[in-house]
Length: 104
Image (cartoon, rainbow, N blue to C red):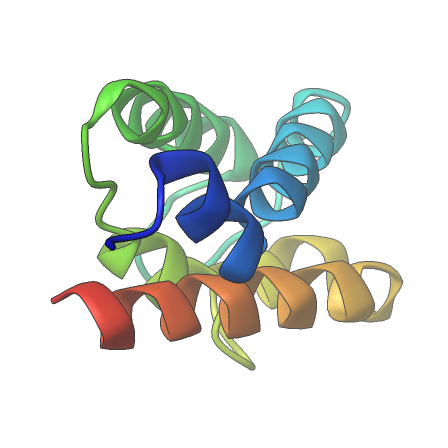
């Protein structure tokens, strides 16, 4: 028998992943300025992140490719939050990457 959607989400820690992504949204909403290769400032990153997060929440099978790119070590997330966000970024990257490898 195939696992239920909830069982699958628990296996891949998607509930925790989405909780962490919500923390990111709150953090980004409080920052300003900065620079990262893909984004002119944190406000642009925040806007694109919110769009992506909304898309992920309503997809039947979410694709975390952009999340993996943004939260990989030394990427946009690290550029804007530095050492303060390393642990959160690493958790997000690991969970999102694990999901993508298993589902795509």
